[in-house]
Length: 376
Ligand SMILES: *Cc1c(COP(=O)(O)O)cnc(C)c1O
Image (cartoon, rainbow, N blue to C red; front, side):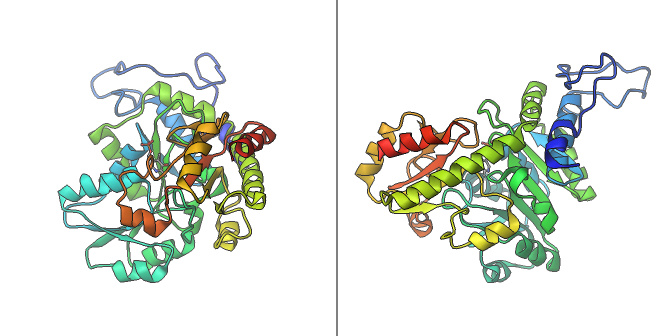
């Protein structure tokens, strides 16, 4: 089936009792057992929930994966992936990664004697050089936040297959509509469904997708054993949202491309970062591994005072953390999303005090452009 058909139907069929077209919210913690040892496959709410299963099967279809395992946040989903490892293991992670992932790895997982090497994963040699006898996993995010640098998915999958490593890609920024890492041979895909998958800025959630039976079995076990499960209502809201993922992503992409081009030719900003611009250093790779360029545009305004004025003058773009919702947001990575990142790393990645990140929503693009022009 095509993406939009799957988005609306995969994992869901009319309710067998009433014919309800929309999957109900199964608000129950426990299930009646017919006799000792006999049940309908449902025993306890943490272990099995029908609404959650519908969401898992739905997003799995969109990511071209066999299995999905949902969690109560994106970070909880990444934490569950770390449960595939044991003390003494080593992970290679891309250095320009979501701040919460960096904090989880360095301040929590490291205490369990799992070691991390942070490398510029856009270069194959850096990954190969970081491999140790105890390396088990490569964890990357592409495009990166907020500089929108790309990592070659095929290259990561090949290096991991040759060296018997588990490859993991955080695909939050592109959503399954624009990028399917599993098609390039990646083992595990993770999403913060808080962002584009849910898309309405009202649910925190995460989901892990894989084709690997052994990995899926372990993740299902961890989901139940560690217990960071999403609520049935949150699953239902996210399931409602994935139905419109295709149309939302098309509009995010259309608006972001128009805005990136407008800002570039306005001559009023120092630099525009967007993989859909022909001047993006990895525009060719972007066209190869993505079917669109997403809704995030980063801009270096060149001057901090101007940036502060710009941020307080915007009327439609709201100054806020997060991204991927229908409404346009603007964030100041230096003091907000990347606040906890050491100065030298911010400098290395080009995250200056005059960089702003736009999460372009699906409003009328003329209004968004007028808002940006006015603030500039
Ligand atoms: C937001 C985000 C996360 C964390 O997800 P939460 O749902 O906030 O826990 C992980 N990765 C990326 C790329 C994100 O943007």
